[in-house]
Image (cartoon, rainbow, N blue to C red):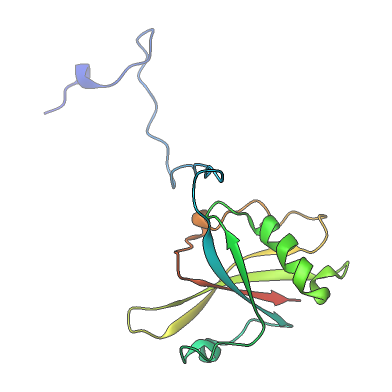
Length: 147
């Protein structure tokens, strides 16, 4: 049984505050030493692809780009990469909506929106969020709606 004397204290005798809440801080990946992962990215004008577009293995949407990246890649980094291959994403007023596509426990695909960015750097939205902190798992697809 813990007594009052078992409480952790700071130097000087005052008790420590409660442990930090929320997910642990994301540790950056050493991109010189860690091998990148293959991220399959599907882009679409106006909206996200539907989950039915991914239902048949090998018949995914044709507008695919394959990117090698790391789990600490931010949505801003991915926005800049998408802009290189999708001219519509370069528009000054373009917004990009990111969604993970993955199978649920029954094997049916789920499309889950995880963040938005602006094509230009004005207005930060979710620019600094990394794939790992958004719940990305290796093997998930990334669906990008260009709005």
